[in-house]
Length: 525
Image 1 (cartoon, rainbow, N blue to C red):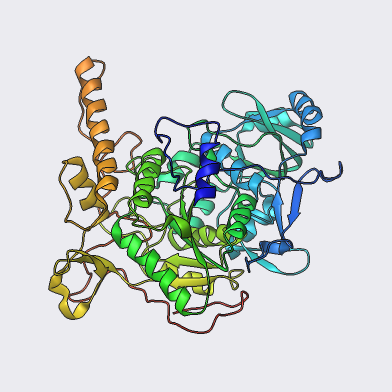
Image 2 (image 1 turned 90 degrees about the vertical axis):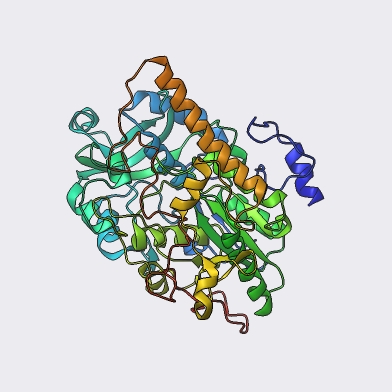
């Protein structure tokens, strides 16, 4: 831990939201030395043969990173200024970030039509050697008629950030029709209006898609004080190797961590130790891309996660906290495959999955959009994920007899209190405290402060007379609403009221002690 603190204190940027402390509980970013690549192959493909400690190999045995060599940045940037250009949206830029660091390995750029169709219809891609890799969500770039006309017969285009700076070139391009209805139907299983990602990134997008090989000139940075927490897959592998991890279990979340989450994560590590692993390490991996309006923003979630580690709810010695740059699609069983696949590329060989992963409420009806158990079932059967060990978990709820979060026991159901994410947010908004033992007090204060900041902002705007107060729209995903979605909770481990008397809504299982499985096998429990 001393070494981690030393690295943190040397960080050149200390954002105001994270005061400097004498003991860091987060993993800072660091520079990696990478050999220069030949000019004919500007995209770095880093073989991971040197990784020890039993880390699972990325897809294809190599991590595909799409950053150009330092010596080539100047010429490529000058070339980009002469090419037709495409301005990127915030979500487009997040996908450039994802691609550039190798999260989508072995994908080498925005999808061409053959890759797009395989993803839509098979949730996988067949490589040149005949092998199959999982790829369940389209990573595509949309353009409109005017942009298509401006590109004309060019074979390369420049990609510009929000300030108009060239950040990448897309080469050997292919332009094809953007079948929006088909894409939405096959990704989300519905075309109902009100899907957050669809409204943000598809509905008003262009009617064409452009694919090609991506060469990224500059690393994607957000300048929000959190860039040092955005570790790439190669950086995570270096850190996990430094910690001598012989098993890595990943936990994806887009909400604050409560003690039920912590119970699941610590119990997973205990059971992995019982299985014979010597040093299992938790990858606590909050999603950092687009989320819907009523989710807690990333900066506040990171503050809350820091308090969880400061208070010892999770062990900082066996936990790596890093930001996953992907946008959130809320596409349920389809999307959870993407979440799991990306963590393989970062070195995780175990993936914790709970009830309704990547799910949301139906945008029009008072029910969940997806069957709560389908996510973990699909992961256990998904093509291309055979090497990943899927860890479903039992339901955690507040045990009134013990005054803490515990695994739900249906034989004494009346002793348990289920606190949904919606209920949690309501308590925080009203500055009320949850039962002792639900969340660490300092972490809870972060949530209260967040919702208090919203109230203060709303009062300031309304008091200024700039706008007239209007009722919140009934559709919870409207761009400006701050009202929590009904029936929403913590993505990977909400604690909803049991769906049947004596039975928890969030089913699952536990990791059974057994001999260490080879990396290439799957443990289903």
